[in-house]
Length: 115
Length: 107
Image 1 (spheres, helix red, strand yellow):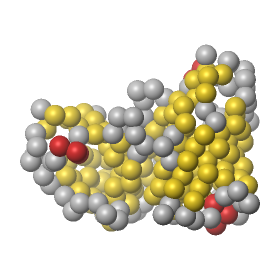
Image 2 (cartoon, each protein chain N blue to C red):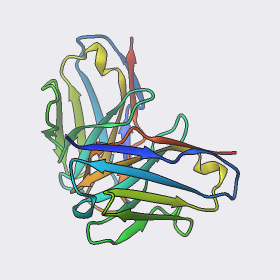
Image 3 (cartoon, rainbow over the protein chains, first blue to last red):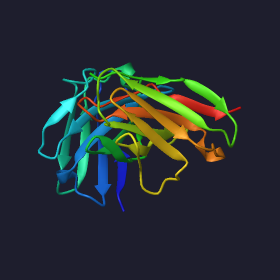
Image 4 (cartoon, rainbow over the protein chains, first blue to last red):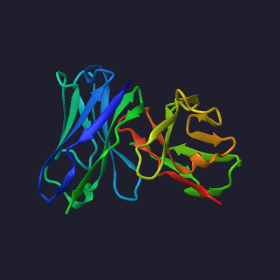
């Protein structure tokens, strides 16, 4: 069974840093595209970042230079290191598997509040 | 970036109604269009991928159609558990982008 479990969210002051984790089971993150999507309170879905199976990474303009996506294949986990956090980074952060363009499995989300 | 628009932004419907939501892309994305359902406090769930393929285990009252720039999600007979917000998303190119959502609530 495919499962994604996020952790690491919390309350952080502006300018601070946080690292989110997404532990995967039922498939290998090393052979998948893995994505972070966020949702600000009461707002829509915003794609944040992707790490491809080959290791290439891409970021939304709003987080480029501040956020870093990475993976640990031994733990089958992906991470989102978030630095220089701002109030507008406040959101629920979801990890999802990008299966050739569609996000077929999602975690339950982890809430980040920058205040 | 490929922009997606959805209409309507919200609608009120009754159980048993046929509901149609449209999504328009800012450029040709062929059939690289996906639909998600999100209920309050929950993660989105994939409903339809590649414009018209129903994700495994989902009821056949959900269907999708379209290609190019214009797409439609149809719920043939709305059920109580279908009241939610629906998002389209393009998988044609990076960055992946989402539509603004359509909230379906009870009339």
